[in-house]
Length: 229
Image (cartoon, rainbow, N blue to C red; front, side):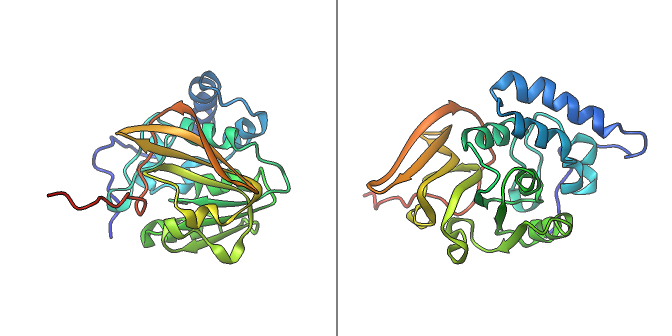
């Protein structure tokens, strides 16, 4: 399986000021769009996003677009990731399940925010990239498997971050949340992606939308359609 980078104009890495690009992302994308948790802003301002992408995409690592990855996957928009992490109200002691690790960027951001991260990725090429990029982060455990299954062996989690857009939140993920735990995701509703926050209580699981915002589509969450004559 090959990484696809043709739709994006790239160039040499020599002379690129990634630190300045990262600060521009913070100033022009995150702060104006309600990424208001200072810990999230600081973490995203420190993690080198280019290190978690195929090298051909490094020059555009901080662009406000979804970058093409393996097998029709894309990166999530930085601001969409920032909004999800902000709404998750993460604590330094939290144990977090990340769905859709891709190349490992969001797992690396979470590494600086929480106590432990279990990151799930279904694509072998992306999992290989993430495994290498996250090798120096012992708080992050990378699991290769179906995104919709999560990782029950590590449950319960204080928070689940679905770093992209899905058609529905499966019960399998809800069951892995601790009581009082939060789940954030982009949920596709009649063709519109809405960033949403769900909370598990002793009585069930409730979800509320907090923004209409584009996000990377994640595989494995399609809603089964009924038979139509």
